[in-house]
Length: 328
Image (cartoon, rainbow, N blue to C red; front, top):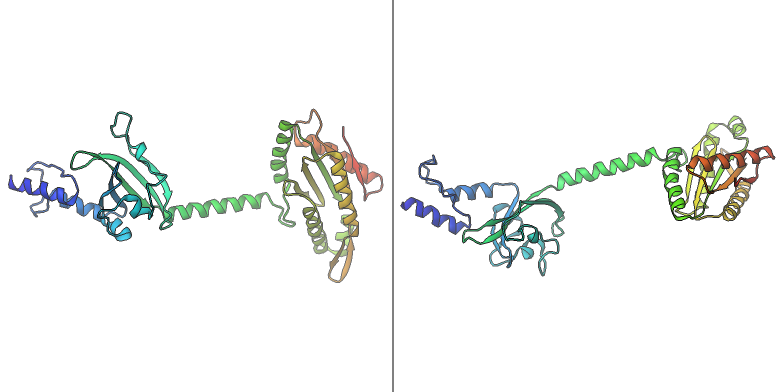
């Protein structure tokens, strides 16, 4: 009996409820009490364990892991120690731990980044009965910073891979896949909001002759500089893509046919003035353009591309180096 009373007293002093194991529970005859054994377990956990009052937020217990990082807890509140805050945390989960009838809810598991030390934690919060019978908050917080860093690195790698899959390697413009993906989004938006949408197709004239005369390195430089010219003339909301070879396309949201014509004619003027220097030689480029707009009945991006292609070939057939339109 004396041994049991000693165990209970030690449990209360440590702030850990006694396990109330029977005398014949098979405990080693080492003199270690259940409370002391539990304290040893908690202090060797590689995680923060703390208990605080629901109403007062006063810290009633913190294991060795927490004390090593956050220091002394005596007479202090959880938000003072863990967040160095002037009041209860806006993200406190206490309201989630009790049901309407005041009984404990199942544990609440969540993740957050501590603004004080910058580390990420996975938290397991629940309401438990304390040594004096009252309900208190128990949190077990495991540092998952390394896992989070790996997740962010993987996410960044995925984003970079996706960007590479949507980018034309030579010019840095969107590629055909990106044009269809993002262009489809602009088309759906324009149809939903009944807003204007224009498309411009562009094809370089006599580009094979450039490659044959100056070499493919020179042809690549021509494509890069023309891509730069196009990119510098459009808005962030516009889509500019190299569809392949010497063929480019622009999709212009909230742009009327008249505005698209004005923009394209200015691009043609700038292109005609462009002189590309390559290995001491001057190269002049020429291009033909075809323009169309979104009309009633258009369902897919291919509907606009078909008309823009017709306008483009009209420019080719009429002598190249010009702008043509097709509205139906």
